Length: 76
Image 1 (cartoon, rainbow, N blue to C red):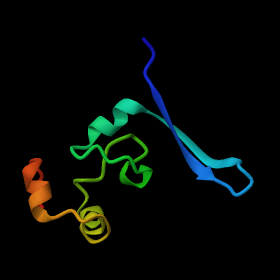
Image 2 (tube, rainbow, N blue to C red):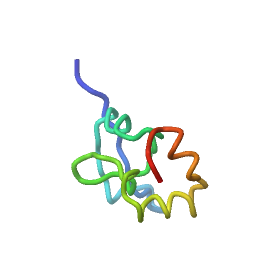
Image 3 (tube, helix red, strand yellow):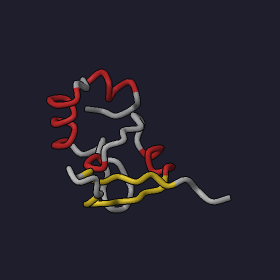
Image 4 (tube, rainbow, N blue to C red):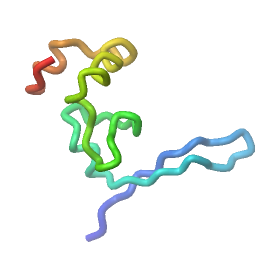
């Protein structure tokens, strides 16, 4: 069975799609929060939850807390 593919890109005013990236749907399972934002993943498909700088951004911009990380087994 073929795995589902998710397509991300920028939808331009003229209806065209640019900056297209396709990833396997299972990649989102690499993150304990199942975040569907490509900036949250490295080229190898691993999530950045274990990156202290990225966690700072997640707390500031996305509303995560130290408790959020502890709840999924990540020490903030």
